[in-house]
Image 1 (tube, rainbow, N blue to C red):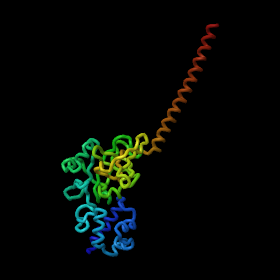
Image 2 (cartoon, rainbow, N blue to C red; image 1 turned 90 degrees about the vertical axis):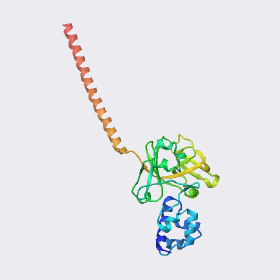
Image 3 (spheres, helix red, strand yellow; image 1 turned 120 degrees about the horizontal axis):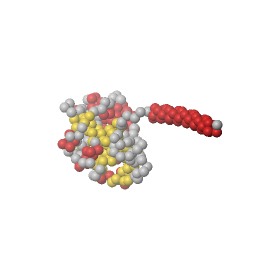
Image 4 (tube, rainbow, N blue to C red; image 1 turned 135 degrees about the vertical axis):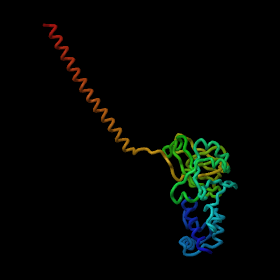
Length: 280
């Protein structure tokens, strides 16, 4: 087998690790019925990957055979419950990150596979290896349910979790965008899909009660990778500025107290002088 396929296979495995789809090379090897030592040699490019191993990996982890054998497309095949995940590319066929603002989230779940809807959304790109592979999307944060982790007007950049891999890929206590039949949610997730077919969704703000979503009601899941937020100056600088303001106010109050005391003394002196003059 051409060694270029082995290199692409190695890149795919590294990507699966970054995405949390596999915990370790040992676990990955065992899931495919392959010896970890032999897998290690393949990933270090000391031997070529076999066609049988490629076949098993494609079936188990949904690797994109197009990418493995031709270098075209994404590393992971992207599908949504049997449909196609629509992505946006530029003229060079490089995938762009679609930005879904609050106003567009209301109809997002009804237009998941609509190229027209997605093409109308703003798009951008980010530097870094992880943003050059896989499908990413950016969502606005609205409300206070995820405070103090996330605040209104924050933007979260997320990687797509393949629907066929969510049993393995969804990691409990991580933050995800969960798109249901009726809404777009950002929550901390506990994965109970294998146990009872549900996802438990938790807010970081304890004021909000957790609730359960049926796995069949979930249309898309996106894992939060990074946050774009408004700049806030250092808390220590803010405290220092506050202390300076308080100190300045205390100084002014002290000066005013001195003036009042001096004024009182002057008034008392004038009263005494007036009384003395009256007696005389």
